[in-house]
Image (tube, rainbow, N blue to C red; front, top):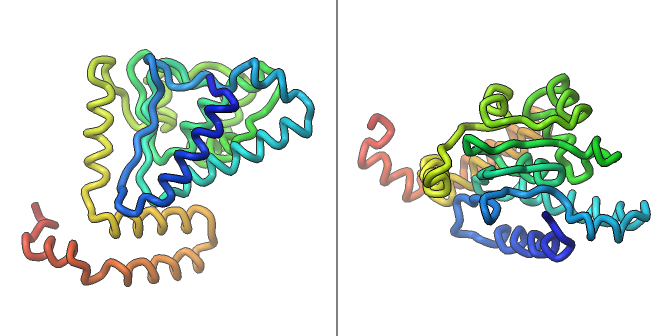
Length: 227
């Protein structure tokens, strides 16, 4: 469960990651075999006033937006349950992997509320309007196999060594230089949030920053593209 203190801790971690100039990837996972079951009920009960709830919503929406826009490749490893706000957190990552017994549930509807941390918008982009509406209005739990079919998950891992396998999976998506990874990620972010003309201009800009770089010259020297 995500308490107020944990929300602030997440804010601090994301702020630190934004300044991690040498980083390429980040793996988000829960402790004790469970990803996150959403907001702590004790915390929620203290902010039932719409004004206070709105402040919490804005705070967490900002945190998840910044997590989504990190120059790093982000991966959520879902073990156990990712419910409510926990499900929204998974959508803020670029990729999601689930263990065989894991589930994701946008259960906010069962609590009489709607998603407020940005997950309601991102889930539509991930799996489409109709399927997103089904999950958001039913609050049903999605198991690993179905999540993969819906493209909500990018793969299923066995329970044993899931964390190690997730690290390996992420490592295969961060093989490039730091500069190249950051350039690719920023291109995807701009394309996601802009019209095509603005996106193309940004792609031109970041391409120039990595063309002729030491990493490219090293790859050319090794003829690495064809191996």
